[in-house]
Length: 415
Image 1 (cartoon, rainbow, N blue to C red):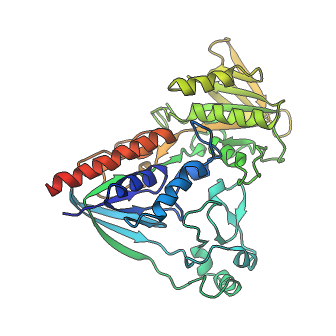
Image 2: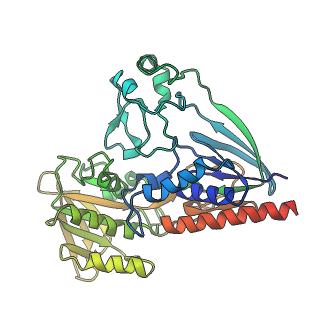
Image 3: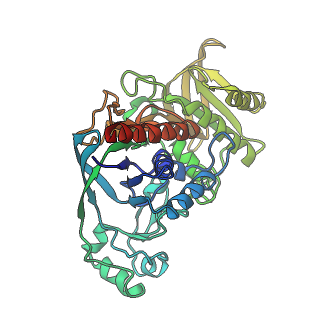
């Protein structure tokens, strides 16, 4: 029997579960597919309930990881298969090379040595980055990454020559690890639903239609616009903004379920806009506003009472170009006011739903339901958004519960 625990996913849930289990005295492995820990929370400007930046929660957990010898983590890694059962799982992990060494934490000389640029995925393609880059300002581990495409081109050698000796290793190869663990915590997180699949909302057709996560990155001081929410077409602050709720959620053709976070995310981003400009008018098209709990309800009430914020109960059925340059028209049925409403705005924000990673990437040996959420079994414990759509606070609670269940599995098997 193995006395160790594997956590698949190094986002907020995974990191929380890992440190909780390790601090109970168990050996823990974290496997994360990205080059950094922190997951989606690292991309947020602020999160509930205190509207604090990601550094609030992540830095504490990163410190706990650094100081706990019970935790081993692998980034740029993916679980390829799971076999066995509770107390004795065999897990194959592939660790991809980052072509840098741990002391490589200043990318500037190498980045300046080449002209190649690619869209920055951390900022949802709203700006560009070089092939040698730091994943994000608070990246953990604090180590640069070199794109594999640069290794196979002349850029790799130019970057290596520009960097201090020993910082770039173009000969790194993928590594296969075989782990034996007693329990597996699935914390594989979520992806924003692909807005290009929602034909009637015209994402990609009109430049001034963005998603809620794109707004979150714009609002962040470290984001592509330095903390300003602007129109992509002209980089000007919008005077009118329209939020389209349930963009893909609660829809039999897309995501059948409520994504839980979208209403509160829109209310939060409305606050961003109102703090940015006292003149901006915000229009929120919604089916239902879901603000669970007293604290969230108070926040909703605060935003709703702003005379510059207009809530329109009606699902947006059509989007088309407006009469002003870059304008976008949102068309909906006003359920309360009655009749069809057409509102032209400078910027439209699609509150896209939360889709579990399991909807697009599934691990052999792990069971998923039809929506892509992990099905719990003895010894395999989903938490966070791998289990259901939840917010950051609920994810932390879910992760702590998962750590306890994993430990219970080991104790039962050992007994």
